[in-house]
Figure (tube, one colour):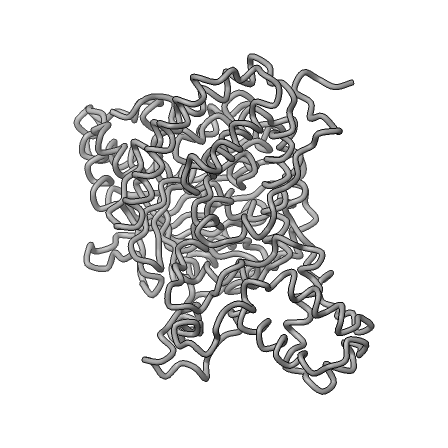
Length: 567
């Protein structure tokens, strides 16, 4: 039997085509949603009754020492092991090339012994220069917010609350500069945990590490305030405490991920597009669903008012978003949202009335009332990427040409002899083994270029196919043209994964890598994107989220937007 909000099978809305969704300008306008990894994590922690405890907190008045926070689930436990350091201000840096931090962390698989802690103390503070083991699942580090950390400690020590406006403008006490997992620096490979239910969705281990880090950081400032003035110190008022997230500085190291993992990217986008299509297919919304949408819309307006950036590009996008949300609020107020197909009509209106930033905000807002239609799609977000490894050598070149024209029509229209079309080159830095983006014609980097230009590779394949018989088999063609193996493999994979390819030139002079960063980070659940250039961005994670003592079915998924107007 259909419920009042069930989609109608005979008028189901089709998914938006990849040619629309997979353009960088749109991907760089995505917002967090019910399918974001942080929200998936907290729903699970609440649903399964996870218990989080502070097992150790040995920090002195100089903020030096160690702490352990354990998360106990139905089948196993995980422990964040934190080391706090006395870092001189001049060594505090957002750069990945930094060599010292205010705090360093690892997520331990289980409960560490004293021997484990001694081993980790010798390695975790060194980060890349150290070595962790398959007992550890992630490695991370964080630095204090220069503007906010000392302010909060000083205010609390005097019995006063932090300044609410300053908290709103900064939003975090520490920000991470890396959260490494999946086998880096000796940590356990993804395969070790992939079969565990709590790790099935992408990046759940990394999100748990950040969530526990937030617990540690808030406990740390309250502890330092007590150490400074035990007779007068107070803790942060609970409502204000939740306004602190964990900051993060993310650069080019993350950008190639979306290019290198087409099957995973496809599953993320396909789940989101399926969720949108389901909601747009709802015949008639219930009063509760309409009330939830209007509530989240108002909170999205408050969120946009809180969002700050000094980067010209983001300033323009924020202005567009605030204007779009005002238009959307007016439209929603003037619309009977209980009418048939109201959600679909509202989305179709947005396609011409709002900018991509506003359209994608609406996509996220439309999902909010429909956990029953959306949340189960979190099971579809992971991917067995080995399934895309085999090339179908029996395919004819005629079929391959047709597939090439369908997937890469945008790339075949580019004049690849134009220097601007190949102005950039991706390479890996020798210093930190991190991806970098250089100017091909100004720097001696071409010989070190990484294969991160699938559009150019597709055009090269098309050129070599021109004089080939359409009846020739792919296997025979690749014997003579082995340089195209990776492109053919990718092309055949994309036939099954239509959302797996960014449909823009990833080496052009006009490329904005922050669009790739924004897309991935929105799936993490990040908010308040603040680009510092076109190549790195600051974000906030778990801002507004409940702490373990307040985590339950009612609070676990009701924190993505602020619950009150900004101060």
